[in-house]
Structures are given as C-alpha cells and as structure tokens.
Image 1 (cartoon, rainbow, N blue to C red):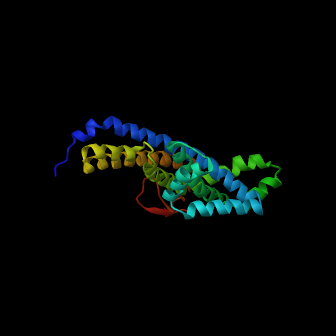
Image 2: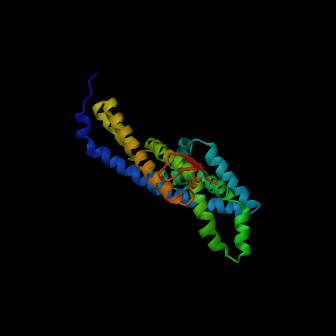
Image 3: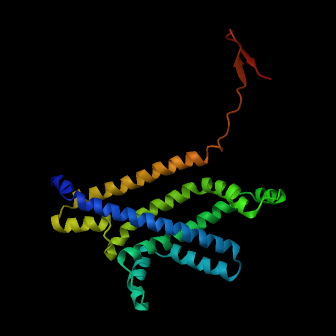
Length: 240
C-alpha cells in the first residue's frame, strides 16, 4: 500500500477548517471550564454544609463518568426535557462542565498548598481580603498548579475528538468524512494526528514560557563557592 500525499493537499482546506473548529470549541470550553471550576472551588471552600455537598456531588459525577457518556446525555437526553441545543453548543458546554470539575480540585489543592501563616500574617498587618487574594494567594497558586492545569488542558483538547460522535464538525469528524470519500485511512488519520500534535506542542511552549515567568522570583540562588583562587596563584584558599 502506497502513501498518497495528494489526499492531504487536496483536502487541506477541509482539514484546516476542522482544525479551526476544534480550536474554537476547545478555547471556548476551556474559558468556561476555568470559570466553572473557580465558582465550584469557591462554593466548596466558602459555603459549608449543603453548598459544599452539592459541589462535591457535581465533582464526583463528572470525574467519575466517561466524557463520552456525558456527551450522549447532554445531546440526546436534553431534548426530552425541552433543552434543544446545537451539537457545537453541547460540545462546548460538555467540555466546560467536564473540565470544570477537575479545575475546581486543582484550584483547591493550590490554595491549600499555601501556608496559612502567610494569610494570618497579612491579616495581622491590616491587609484586606481582596489584596491577600490577588497579591499573596493567586500569584503563588498559579505557579503551583501550572503542571496539573496544563495536563488537564491537554486532556481537554484530546477529549474534544469524542464530539465527532454527535456530528460536531471538528477535526476528527472532518477526517472521517474525507475517509468516507477516499478510503485513505493512513493519510487522513496521519494528518489529523499531526494537527492535534501541533496544537498540543504550541500549548506546551506557551505554558513553558508562563512557568518561567511565574517562577522567576522563586529560583534558589547558588551558594557561594567554598574555595576561590588567589589572584596570580594556582593555590586554593578556603573561604572563611
């Protein structure tokens, strides 16, 4: 079996259109997911009793069930209750609520990792809660949660391929349509995989730059050398 490169060039416009749709759905779902996660984290930590229990139920359901099943429920069960949404809207909301459950726990873990003594000291100095949040807690939390947050965003991008089962015109669905016309599985899936890899690579580069920026003040300075050379001599002198 030979590799037909003309399939890629012939259907490049369709694949790029699917790539842009994937990018739009992932970015929109990511933004909403970050907001949902922040609200869920706040409610779980600041609303004791019933509020925290409701948030726990939401987190456990969305983290404990496959995203494919959640997508089917949003798309096929919603109309039963009069909720009629387009496939793209279902995909965006599905990604938002699915990722929001994970983001909430990532936020909470980052906040709890910050020593309580810092907040208590800030209160003792008369610093307000808003200033403590934005100047003490959030800057440290962002550097602590960067790695798990990046992994979850990567998972979100790859999980978006599942939306092809509800006819969202994203990258995987576009590739399947091209295969239905050409029966060139290898060429099309190779190109689809390459575009997903490209998107993940760009994300990795951006988060790496963000990590360097957020941790620029956390670098440990090198200890002074124990020995130093005497000017004009090859002997070593111990530094007191």
